[in-house]
Length: 357
Image (cartoon, rainbow, N blue to C red; front, side, top):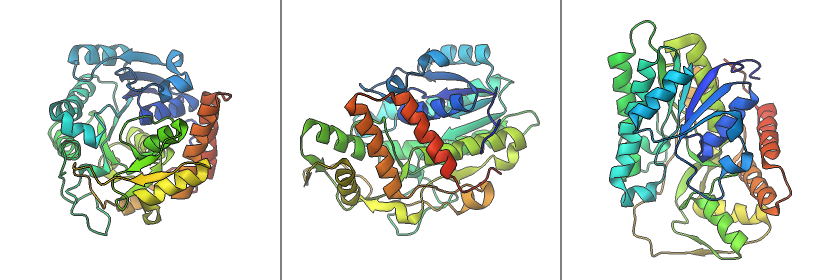
């Protein structure tokens, strides 16, 4: 599908040591891109970045996006053409404990990456990854559209709403002139896939409990989320980056890259599917948690379908099956996880039914 879209392109990925960033970096390398990664060191052990063993094949830089001096130096040396900005504090529950860190990283950090890109004249396309939680969530049954109000109950969600407002303002303030780069934002759903070991995320928590022979404890069994395999939004990011690079400001907008409506399941339903695919595990519901988390959240992806030509490929059952297969291979300890991850990318790519715009 992608042919030579990214072959030889200089692509900078912030947050490349993270879960989504690691998968994106691997995919870009498979497409022949020259990749530079800028991120903190992996913050979990194990981590996807370590499992896929890609560090030696890219220009790897460990640094904080708040460090403008280091960030600008990397931009100057690498001269990227396309930016995928994923570096963030990505956890809702941690944002209650670290509100200042969450805002500094997600809002000021994004501004510093945008500024580094504006100073670097080689940059043509910038895909800013935010979140479905950027919307003012009224917990209604219809999906949110790109023009709906930004907001957020918790500090993480509101920080992502701020990033969307920042991106729109930055585009109008600085990116209207010919020669300036094209900036788009992408909002995905609850992303799942192999190699995520973050705390307080449903499937990683399930996997840890199963591997330790412990009960899976879930907090909000009836809360619903738009679940999707990690390769789904990544395919949208790649498509968006390509369109920004080749067709410019026509696609410099906001896009929801969520799953189909039939992929919206409750936490309890997802947990039961994890146990079913793993072939073992038990679950217990806890009612002791007092931190607020949304019970209902969905995205309307009509704009992505009509404007980009993008649409989801996997059902939620496919997504969970592929995710559990990855973890099982990892914990068996007999599989080259880089090769297996590349195989999952290839399987997904050959399943795509939409065509590159």
